[in-house]
Amino acid sequence: MTQREALAILKTGANVFLTGEPGAGKTFVVNEYVRWLRASGIEPAITAATGIAATHISGMTLHSWSGIGVADALSVADIDRIAQKEPVARRVGKAKVLIIDEVSMLSAAVLDAADAVCREVRRADAPFGGLSLVLVGDFFQLPPVSRGRDPSVRFCYESAAWQALNPIACYLSEQHRQEDAAFLDILSAMRASAVEELHYERLSARRASAPPADAPRLYSHNADVDRENAAELAKLPGAAKVYRMTASGRENLVEALKRGCLSPETLELKEGAEVMFTKNSPQGRYANGTLGRVAGFDSESGYPIVETRQGSAIVADPMEWQVVEDGKVRASIAQIPLRLAYAMTVHKSQGMSMDAAAIDLARAFEYGQGYVALSRVRTLDGLHLLGLNARALEVHPEVALKDHEFRAASEAAAETFAAMVPAELEEMQKNFVRAMGGDWLSEEAFEEKKSRGGLAAAGKRASADRYADTLALLREKKPLNEIAKARELTVQTIIRHIETLAAQGRIHRADYEYLLPRADAIAEIREALAAAEGDKLAPVHEALRGRYSYEAIRLARLTGAK
Image (cartoon, rainbow, N blue to C red; front, side, top):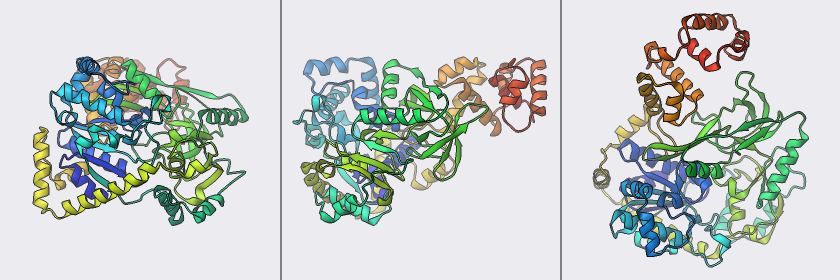
């Protein structure tokens, strides 16, 4: 099934299982669907099976969203108690569309527990209380998470909730990550449990006793990762520059964000350190998994300058990871979007695309662990194997059989929807939007709105909305720290919003005049700005002997500086 076909089915509001090989575009399809929902006035509830996956989509774990916590099974009394919790009752009761990412890592018991809570809160006996469900994932990847690694844990497609939902399988067939036919053949053979001598030979040819120094290592155990990263950083001369994570919002949500964030709470870097970006740049400057080396530190901000493998020099400004609920930011953390790239675990590499990696699968212990690791790399030439055991090339035998069912069901669904008259399909989509209380947009109207900007994907709020919220608070003459607190952002980010609004012509001096320093201070700052060479503020701050903050200098610059 193509991405376009899957999107058309999603827009009907049908319960869907969106799957496909790594690199097939599952995340792209979900983001497009979320943009369409929001453009139609429908705010989806976005969740994931794990904290790491949740940080990628600015959602929360299904466990937190549904209130079930770490429980694998719930009694009737448990369900009643959870359903009476105000936050759970509010978000579950208001929800219309529920998206669950990395669903393969949910056990049958967890999906059934979430289903039971939704039915109780919404007072409806339909699956998940009548919510429209989108289940996203690939069962060939890491298996369900369970306490104590219980071998009896069942896949969520075996749950009563899954059977009741009976989701339409949308199996994406396109490939947008791997570019190497021989490598794709190996990965396809693993999915089919049909690895042959030829595939072993091709992988064996990629064994490397001394892989490139700048290729990140993937290990199956955390201890190996921590040891290698610390040792490699220690080899570099000089003292490390330290960046500490900041946070705001509800404590439990902040802690969940920290656990799932790929950037550490305390990031230590030195010039020459090999690093990896841990988030996608909204401007497209880098992606989650982009590799590079710290070339130095910006003299004005102190932030690291990363020279990527493609030759770009990027100042790595702090970015935010958020939990967005009902279109509002409930918690956020901010950190430099980097981590040391000498080593990382296979688990934390999920969702990344890498040009090269040195992978040690000698101690692989989970079905799917080897498949996840190998499928992170785009080409066979970029793969450097440090070790391999028999388990590393195995996928769960039950999943291999179930996969045939999903593929066949997806083909049947594609044929059914392809046979529909376009007007019939559009009417189904209109009816869904109306039932959800939204406003129908034709495909042409949606594309036009998207081309103008301002449509937010999963994990993103529209920039225009973000700036509008800041502008509204400025016009209420709120102090900077209050605006930052209300927006759950840093003061520096609010200043950047003001600068952007000014560049767009959407703000006037009268809107921020109350924040400006005294008239004589503005004159002194503007004189220092005029005397400075270039646009960096550090020399200006130094020339003014630290009498004015960087924020004051930036605001004064807006009044007509050079």
